[in-house]
Amino acid sequence: MSFLTRVGAALDTAGVRYALVGGFAVALHGAVRGTVDVDVILAWDSRSLRAAEKALKAMGLVSRLPITADDVFRFRDEYIRNRNLIAWNFYNPQDLTEQLDVVISTDLRGKKVQRIETVDGPVRVLGRSDLIAMKRASGRPQDLADVDALERLR
Image (cartoon, rainbow, N blue to C red; front, side, top):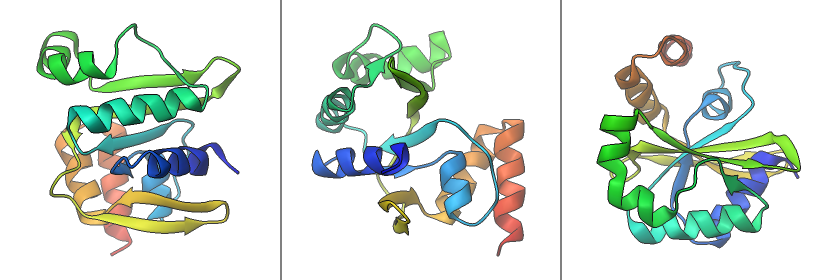
């Protein structure tokens, strides 16, 4: 089972509402895009963050920063505004290719999620329109290139 599907299975088992939003999401929507890390957004509440943190730790992932789910929930605005932290990074110290970012600047609530079957199992991916809107709002060059690629598929 791939890292991507193990992440999806762990979050599903923990009851966490999540969606893939990074390069894997773009690729699963049909636009070729290389990436290494997995990017997810969650329904923004303390229970979801705690459950995600617990599920990721059970997979052997550790937070790159010395912060907890409760810290991220409580100080989200400060982290974004004063520290330019838009994602909470986890990695596997035994396999540095296994990296995951929990994007803290976007809430999953009100967004459409698709369940997509991969060769290794199902994952949840942010719907194409919401993914395009999220990437357009970020304004980063790679995200704008992803928007162009996703819009060409329509």
